[in-house]
Amino acid sequence: MRFIKNNPSKKILSIREGLNLTRKELGELLNVHSGTIKKWELNISTINRVNYSKLIIEPSG
Figure (cartoon, rainbow, N blue to C red):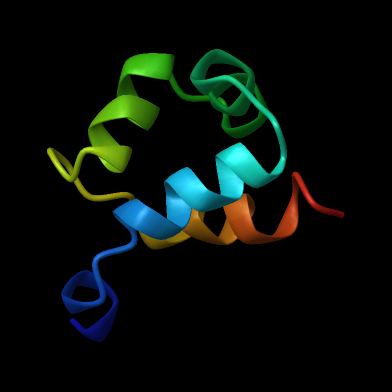
């Protein structure tokens, strides 16, 4: 529940921009559609823990 309360949308956007990736490129890395990335960034839907973990671990290292 704490994960959901700590809205990760700004963090997702910050990580993507920090890596200089488009939504499409990040989506390809995480195996999700670019529209899903957009929804996460705009807080329309919530990223699940598995994908959030991939976001933190995979693209940066």
